[in-house]
Image (tube, rainbow, N blue to C red):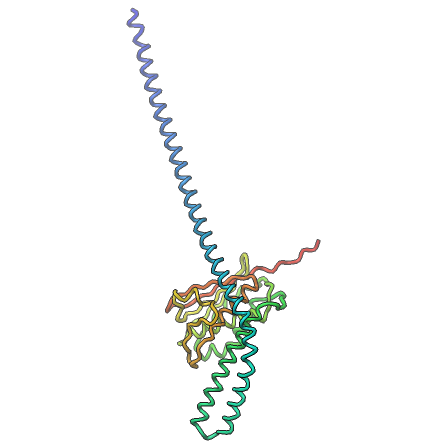
Amino acid sequence: MRLWKQEPSLEQARRADRARLVEQRRERRRVVASLGSELSRDRRQVKVLRADEARLARLVRELERSLVNAEKLASIGMLAAGVAHEVNTPLAVISSYAQLLQKQLQGDDKRTSLLDKITRQTFRASEIVNSLLNFSRTSGSEFAEVDLNKIIHETLALLEHQFKTTQVKVQEDLLPALPPIHGNAGKLQQVFLNLFLNAKDAMASGGMLRVATQNGDGVRVMIADTGSGIAQEHIQRIYDPFFTTKNGGRDGRKGTGLGLSVTYGIIQEHAGKIQVESHVGQGTTFYLEFPLMRKAVNV
């Protein structure tokens, strides 16, 4: 009788053991799932940290390049002011005497041709000197409220004839009611003049120049051409003073290598940024960004 009464207790113990085993397995599964979730979360955090690290590394490289360019601009600017004034006077004398001799030697084609070459080269040297002077005058200008759309439109109007003769089509995508920026209109016009002329020279057989403005955290300008492009090994040097990839266009004139240096200096003066993307045979795109004008708050 006792043995018969103990059998249910043994069966109950077995069931309890099975229930505990099932519960333990469930607990293990929950632990494994929890660990897997934490591992996935940790992996995502690692990816985010690596992405942040990569962005910081890119930012450091950009800042280093900016510092190097700023140091180059400062050193060449100090040299430019002194050299330009010293060179301008003898250039003017040479040019004046060459033109005077040309008038006196009319009919002598051989000598007139030589004097014409002297005159053209003095003009070219004078242009370089004037560029040096502009380069050295990157500070001390009056700043005011500036409408970039207006400056861009006026600069394109100045070059309208040149664009037509070189078969360059212009597409303007200027954002209406673009917020103003704090800047110097004359210097900003020089920036756009340099970039537009560079684009024109890069499209020797004609092409398309697209100019667009946008508004976001700052005022952005995009200048894209369908020209010859810039080789990747030259991209890092395009802002270096006297560096040029122009070997002479239709008029046979080579670039001075100061246009983009001056452009970079002016944009830095306006607390702006300039970036470039280029592919040989496909064209070049410059991205400019300027901070929004801060409005005064009356207290």
